[in-house]
Image (tube, rainbow, N blue to C red):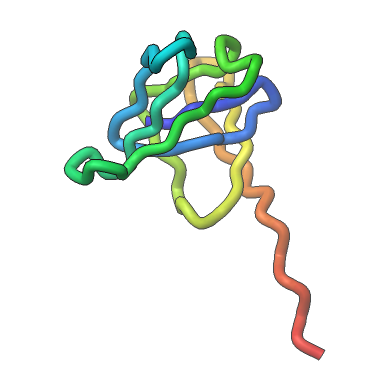
Length: 90
């Protein structure tokens, strides 16, 4: 599963992503990366979180890279790797 923001950036990838209410916060996005661990999750709680989309049938190719995610015609997906390359050693 992944969660994508309004600018097509993948904000999280995990086996379990849900919308939850915690205290006074309604509709937080809980990204549960390690469901078997007590604290294996993080929340996405930006003001525009209601505009984020959760995709259940895909996961990002490499969790250590930064991606933009697009839904193409016909319902297929495309990941665009936008991870900056490190500066070459002098």
